Image (tube, rainbow, N blue to C red; front, side, top):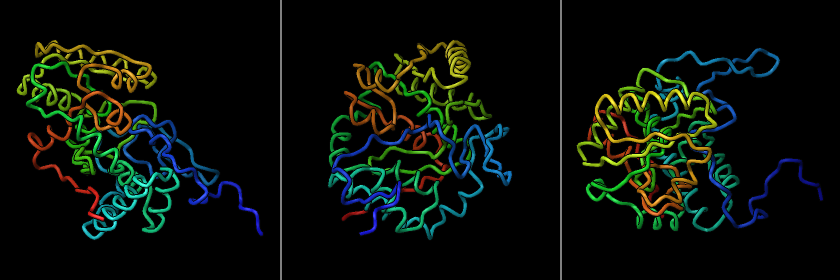
Length: 292
């Protein structure tokens, strides 16, 4: 019998437990296809070198037009369904994602969309039970997963593809890789979030930003300045671990991050509601799982 090579994964020998989901926006390793990140890759012939990102928009990656054509949506939706089925059965996330996406020969960015739009039946039921509507959130304290919500709205404003997941959350496929870069859409995005919250009578708001991410302090100052301009009752805090804060808080968490959705006390589908109500021209690709 030939011994397996290093790094080989046998799905059927993998423990039937889920790994922790991959990070949503604050990834620490570069996206192999570039993505809408704060770095871009350059192949020098001697390995890939990370170059500073000089882009000023949170817009589409050049490869996205080909990756998310009408003809690809069926395969992507089936991949979400298959991956969600394996998660429901208890198979490990990483090996299941690879198995499903290899079947359809998906690119890295297509795989990212499939991963972000999938969840098990158990996760879906739990998330639905804890979700509160915009109307129910009126007058309640709300804690915003800062980068999660802000980057999704920035992406929507810059004509990036937005994806509807199985839990009805709207997802983007941007990642900031440890460094946040202000873009043209940043101020309009913060203002749009604030106007929406004000109209919904959600006035007691806490923004949480990841302190390990570079430029978080600058973003905190910018958000606070915008809040003061409009006289919004916002607090903006830097947190070493905002996920834990959002999970433990009695406030309603505004996020689409799966780890938080699975463990928080209540949550608000804020980015999706803003896009549906205020950004109706945004192209939203529905990848929610098809029926088994």
